[in-house]
Image 1 (cartoon, rainbow, N blue to C red):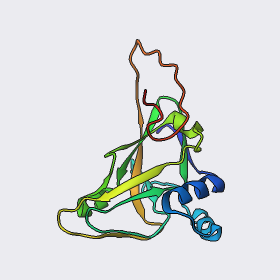
Image 2 (cartoon, rainbow, N blue to C red):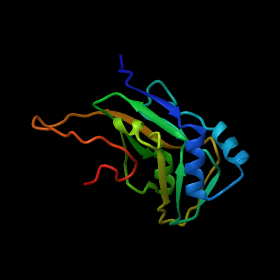
Image 3 (cartoon, rainbow, N blue to C red):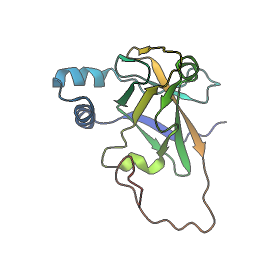
Image 4 (cartoon, one colour):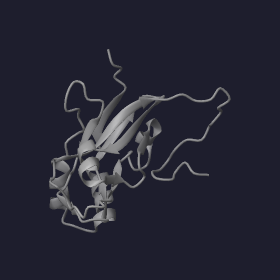
Length: 171
């Protein structure tokens, strides 16, 4: 039997609104609330799927070489010694060369407790060399997350605790 080691949740509406406005600029609260209410938690497509599909909260179009940063509205509570690794959905990568800008998104277990509620963002680029446009509708899977167990070295003695998002663990 597979280990049950994590749980997806939505971030709070306030956190989503703050992050949405910081990313896309001010929009009426009603529109942001509607987007938030329609967010679907990640899920596996089949019982044999390793990846949990993340669904786009908005419609978007990416022309060749365009980039978009998307606040997903999702956070994930993960047991210690596990990490969530995020990749583009296979078909989108194969058909369009849709890429995560950091190649693989790493969501550590302590990210859940950050000041931003562990809000998972995605930055995507249409890296096509065939001049193909990527068009996705809200509610369509665009990224997949896979949980992986990891170990540490025998002489590890890290004491630092996270409080923040991207780059928050850099010294």
